[in-house]
Length: 262
Image 1: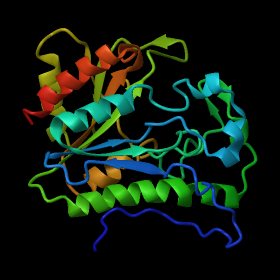
Image 2 (image 1 turned 45 degrees about the vertical axis):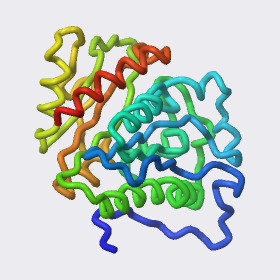
Image 3 (image 1 turned 60 degrees about the horizontal axis):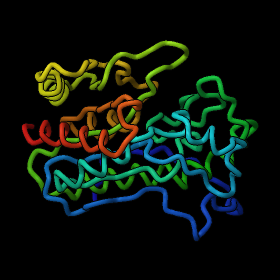
Image 4 (image 1 turned 45 degrees about the horizontal axis):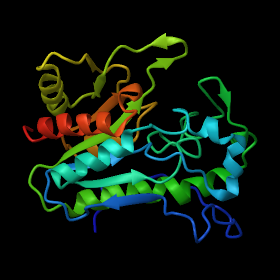
């Protein structure tokens, strides 16, 4: 089977101990693989789980619950949207602090040493073997799963949506947008999402705010969207708007209505 996405591999010594124990959850979760919906959903920062072997990366549970470790609310929105659209969904199984699945492997943020003022002690002094172990256990399976699903999707003109959430304050600066749509060269899907979300006039929609897409900070959409020529976009929801099940359900409903028009 032809694989369009390429994932760089370094070779770890044979004696390297696996990052994930046999009784730990897999590196990703796949929902509705045979979904009839036109959209493929991905959630790169769905979980704040840390492999047992890494002892929480030296962070306590309170720090691991913060936005530095994951995108709070994003997984719930993605699950709800997948159910409404009968769409396939791939969710990351482990924290972005272990290895950020949406960063190129050459990026310093791939395995961050510091995030929003917090030192990630479990990421200091890593050996090449440590790094390769995380790549092989988490990065490669996740992106191979996305590539495989896109190869196998039996739908006409698929769309790729990446679901994220963003903190309302970063580095002391407030972010006023309720939702942001990120895109780059291919604006086909982004323009339609921006128009549909802004039309009711009750939310502030960011166009490449608070984030855009670039080669330094993004891997998922450039690799699986741009390289294949599939219309794609990133949806960023502000985390303080996702604090309750009712709020999450409201965004699922709004996004489902928008996606139904695509």
